[in-house]
Image 1: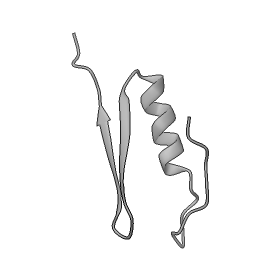
Image 2: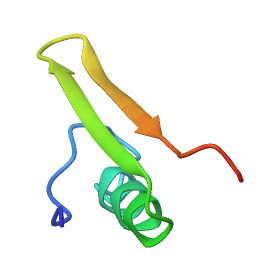
Image 3: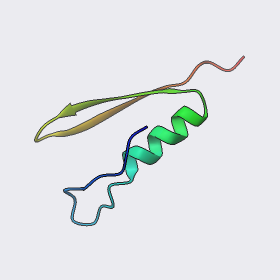
Length: 51
């Protein structure tokens, strides 16, 4: 998994992405990240269709 780390946000905790990763994996969803330095991070979550 992803470990919590430092944040550059004044009010942040550094826990958002690790929590999102754990929730997605617990439900069997895929999660990926596209990091664009200086702009931000795009989070892509893919969940299977309900049967």
